[in-house]
Image (cartoon, rainbow, N blue to C red; front, top):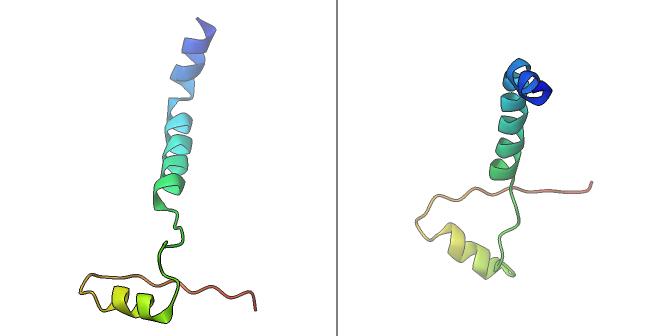
Length: 59
């Protein structure tokens, strides 16, 4: 039963690491498909739903 003893001693560390991994998976962002033009973006922004815009530049 050394594995069970190890789990009992390190359960908090495992919970914290698991929580960080899950937070990364669920909170990461990804590009929105279907916005290929300025008109599509304008339609999305003015649809009445809250929208978060994130801009990225290599410069």
